[in-house]
Length: 104
Image (cartoon, rainbow, N blue to C red; front, side, top):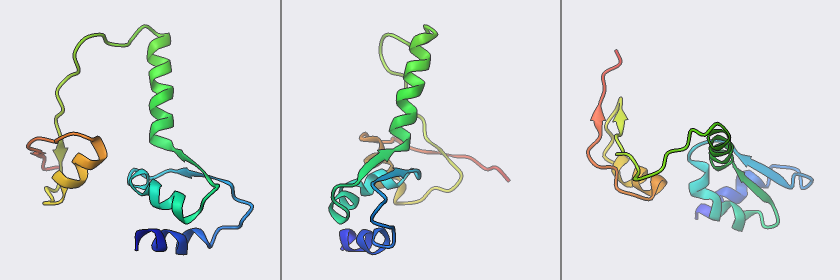
């Protein structure tokens, strides 16, 4: 079903389009479906590309950190019940208890 939905949108693109940048944070979750819906297309995850550039910049400046990773804290303006599931899937780890922040 997901592949068919992706195919419906991707078929609207000209066949000359061979590379697509996944410019939204949730698109990488659909990358497998995108690839099945439009085989032969090159997919660029903008978040991954940005992370590579940031890592290069930090390394060049000697600003990388050795040792254990810091703690993950999740701050939200709206605590959704699906956040734990979706957020964990995006990050590949448990989110822990989110902190609700009022920005009004």
